[in-house]
Length: 608
Ligand code: HGA
Image (tube, rainbow, N blue to C red; front, side, top):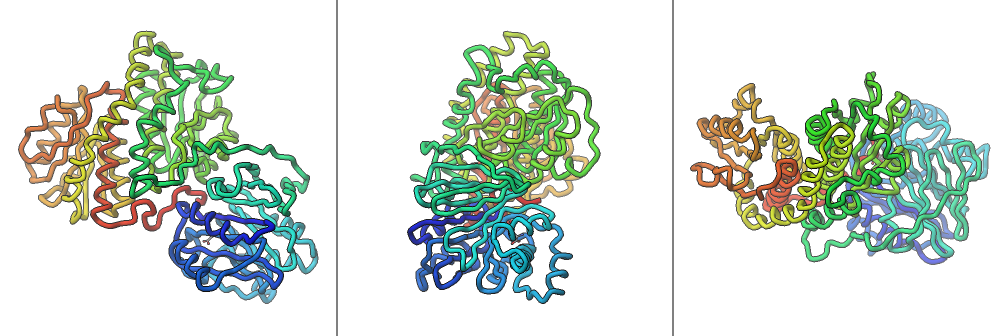
């Protein structure tokens, strides 16, 4: 979602802010803006479109100053226009950037209008800056005026505030949206994500819910939501994982697809031996595994699809009931929690607003414990969960998730086997599964070798408006994920169905124009799926089959066949994901869409 950067230094901060925005652009990219405080007051540039449009304005009219705030927007309230772009002002001297949603903005707007404030935008954000301005009339200290204002806001926010006569500090705060402080030498920063600041520092402080922070050049003072000063630890970023460079690849998405053998290895590393899952990977408290009687998995989007695969694994291997639910539904209903239920969340960023809200709700509901499978060690989800299994995928910049998904699946497989071991899985079966996992990176590499063939296949999708994905068993969630990927980046309408559901409705859609993408597992579902394919072929549907060659589907007429390596069936959902990622990628490239930053989407969904 939106990205915020703020800086105070002894040098001009304009370049620092613009570079920070470019690094944050994956979060939101409909408009951007910067406000810089210098001795003449606060001046600003805002522009619709990508950060380059803002850079173009700086090229014509540079801004120069030693304190500034900046923002890249993913609109929630009001169209992506220049008037709605942040920073927002109250008068000429007070400017603010905001990530989040102010839920009570309507009554606040009415109150402020009654006091004579004029609104220049349609955003919920603008109320905050006028409220601070109003508070300053009775409380001239900017820090206190901000603290007083925040008590009036309902919803989620991370903010940065500058004022023209404040030449030695700026204020930032967070509640419900992420914000990190970057600590430099005689300069300090804030940002929505530490990636935005890696060009200026590697020392970070992760703010807690409700924190307000005063940043001067030499000091960072953090106040909790009771106004008490708090010391928070500084973490040092490991530069080996700064992957904000595309390398030889044309898009981040392709780079991230090709990183999968390496990051799946990193995810397995230290979590399995030659024969066993090493339960120490869940932390000192791995004793919880033997008490689990149920599992509830809650996630959003691609992570939800990973959770759906895990349901098959957990029920099959451990024989325990497992339910999977999207977080935006879970958080707003009354949930019945059976005794000894593990609450498991999945999120790439660990900042997904709905998943965090679900976790906070679950913590009140008497679960056995909470486990987060997440890619970002410093994220709120990790900090607020009792246990964590990191996916170790490294930064994922492409909006369409690829390596985060396959490493989530890998982490879920480790978790499923660990739970199963406590529920009667034999040592031989555990060893067999662990051996299969050890070969996973090599199979994923093999799957990537179909890239050139898939590129040719993708050409045939360029003029399609619809596509239907079919799978059975663990391949059904992979079909869902494949169709989501195609929708997200190529804007082709795609649906996914369990293949057995075909004749209960979707078969009506099948004609010569409809490509059907079938994921064929090589297990006891094979013959059933072959029958489903016959049903499609009989109606003239164009069949694209992804299967291993021993399925004997490669020589069938009317089938475009893509070979997937033959693997142990437990690995099939992970290995079958690879060709679908490549297909979506190449279709998007043929169609000329913005692969890494598809329209209307943002990487880390930090608002509801
Ligand atoms: N509500 C504000 C900020 C949106 C946001 O944080 N998106 O991620 C707006 O619409 O400008």
